[in-house]
Length: 90
Image (tube, rainbow, N blue to C red):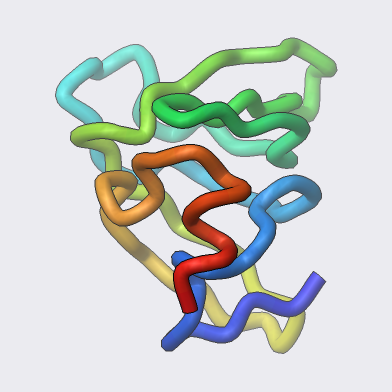
């Protein structure tokens, strides 16, 4: 899946590889995996160990791993909102 750095907030996130870089909750820092679901305020991530974790978008910084081997760090607040509304706001 290709995520354009300048348009990341308009992209479908399900299927993207992600890692939590910064969080106010220290137990969330460093969690990584594949996004398997998204709601208005959360991302569900399937970890390497096949554990499903629900992460709030608000107040977390995420690193997205792009197909061209670059990393994109962004604040989760830009993704708050229903996915179908956010994707259509181009």
